[in-house]
Image (cartoon, rainbow, N blue to C red; front, side, top):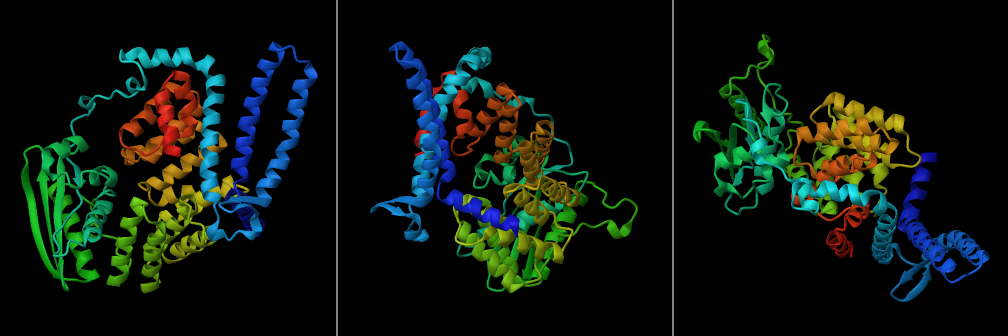
Length: 506
């Protein structure tokens, strides 16, 4: 109960922008003191003037926090916070404005503090490539990729051939379910979902070119056509080196979960057979791989696929929550749907969705998923991440839950990412970087993981590598800028990047 109370207090402090006000006051106050310490001696001002300024700034700090707690700026003027309906609150807009002030202040602080100590070495590193600027930090050669192993494959998103073209979530889900089974075959190298699905709509490149970019020898592509109560699924396995079809099959079945999972099983096992991989050693009962069904309710399964597809894009958190909630309502025993619901509950506040107590909802959903299927990794990862986010943080519990997630599924990238973040938080930078490295090995296109690896390198003082990683993420299309890197950009003299970041923040 004490932890829940502290968590609610922390949430309310964040909603009222107390931390942002503290940050603005601290940054602006520090800059004012620096300016005063330079200007006052130049004008011959006595020492007591500077001391008075410092005393006033220190005295004003708690007053500023109390005012931020008690009052809120609204279009109608200043009002007491209790008198403002939370739904009509302008605190989020005010918070964004304060963020811009903090970013500007941090840039100035960073330029003053970091500039002298880092400018020369960083500029020297950046100019090693001969081009200067930050672009020289991320020169990567595509020729460095090794020849893909013969037992490597990418599963491309299946094409939606349904009459109304409204089954993309289903065709994507079919491909991803097959990918999730194949990725657990020890002797098979499978391109990550993020990497493979990044080529969606780029069929014109041709299979050999896509396979080369993904560094795989084989590609599985397919299509899905739903019409009434019938479904047609076509799959074909291609050797990208020769651009020849190794196997293809069309499945016409009545639409049911039993048939859907059976088709997924057949496709996955045929791929393993075609690539000459032996499953289960000498145990004939373990010679087949199986898709983790989890439900016999077709409505629940389709809602789960729609919710999962929407969750990946992060473009509609409330809509994603509604779909997962409908999925578990349709089949309360569907463990994977409960795990997905726990995951989206856990990230909702970070996407400014705070209309409910999502912390408690996430814990209940994760525990429900575990009660239904303790072999799932995701609910343990969610619980570990929540332990790392709440106040006070119980790092022992956070590590224990994340370790359990990795123990159950060492291919669960979220668990590696979140454990790395907790390691970063407690200062175990070497361990954090090992976790992020494993995350990126599983999914080289996981840009959030690359960002946290860059942060860890920055904290460890490896500025050159940190900027390489961060720039690589930017070149790969990772959105926005991270203010923690702006002082380094300012110290490097790259003010165009700083200004672009400020524009993005606004």
